[in-house]
Amino acid sequence: MRKFIPLQLLVGSMLVLSLAGCSESSDTPPWEASNPLIPIPDPPLGIGIDEVYAKLTDFPDPPTPERVRLGRWLFYDTRLSADNTISCATCHRPENAFSEPTPVSTGIDGQKGGRKAPSFTNQAWTLFPHFFWDGRSPSLEDQAGGPMINPIEMGTQTHDEVVERLGGIEGYAKYFEEAFGSQEVTIERVTKAIADFERTRMSGNSPWDQWQEAQYTGGDESIVSDEVKLGNDLFFGTARCNNCHLGQNFTDSDFHNLGVGWDPETQTLNDEGRYAVTKEEKDRGAFKTPSLRDISKHAPFMHDGSFATLKEVVEHYNIGGTPNPYLDDKVDFEKSDKLDLSEEDINALVKFMEALEGEGYQDTIPEAFPQ
Image (tube, rainbow, N blue to C red; front, side):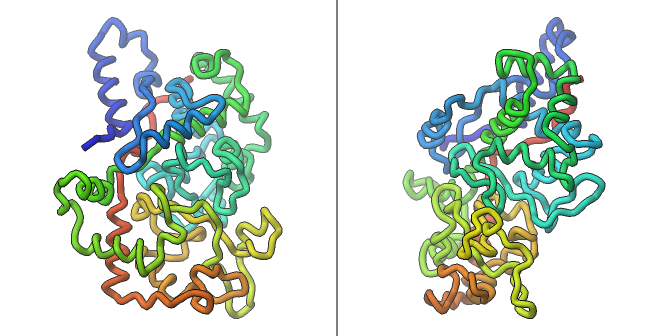
């Protein structure tokens, strides 16, 4: 079985090697020792290597180790925010599969946003041009730049201010030159480096992936329980979950109204979702289908964190969502067959989703940053 080596293990191994050579370690800045240059990792089990690299090479300028290292610093660096308190990782936490364990995000000065930060794992190959819950950004680069100048997220007024601040940090100059060929700091370079780091955060080798491989190789199929296997059958069968949660990343990258955020008393939505971008009636209250990989790592669920558990999510589908004029046909029982899932079925589907908890994306904040 092909085994994926998580980034922190690679970093740890290389740090040990660098410290073994005393003559070299004294010349290595502490921030470089804690964030050494490493190869672009292979995709983990369950994420097709050929497909990933075919997608990566579609870019005019595919990720490089130098840009990924720079992007890792920038992703965790709070100096990108107006008051040096907020980084990308403040909301996209590695321990939560680069999502967060709160209903909505908290930005500068403790301000609360209206939505929960979604995970961005496996974006190396899921190259659909729609990012954020409402799909307003056409690329990971564009998405990375948005929060920097959002007044309730990172709070800097302009990208020029971000560039000026980073340009004044002498230690970063070397790494911009390694990554881009010169020491010039631009917002395009900043967001490209962050996006390339994010593209290396690939999740797989979950118990479900190992079970899938075992079925084809004659391996040990007891890696998952009978309950997970029942959940698998339901997910791809009568529960119809894979109508939207499909492919290796378990998402169609499309937008659906499930009735989340609909107020039956006032007959209004508390968030227009995709409609704010497209101005098309069909998109009112529609939000992007999230990946189910590592979904168990970042409760509560939905764009507003309104469901505390995965069981509540499945129960919501089981009743056909919340009726409203824009409810998606795939969950509306007036336009599709009822699910009629039993308690046993619902629990099995939850266990199936929990078995999608993988590895490969894990990371920790660097111990030091360029100064």
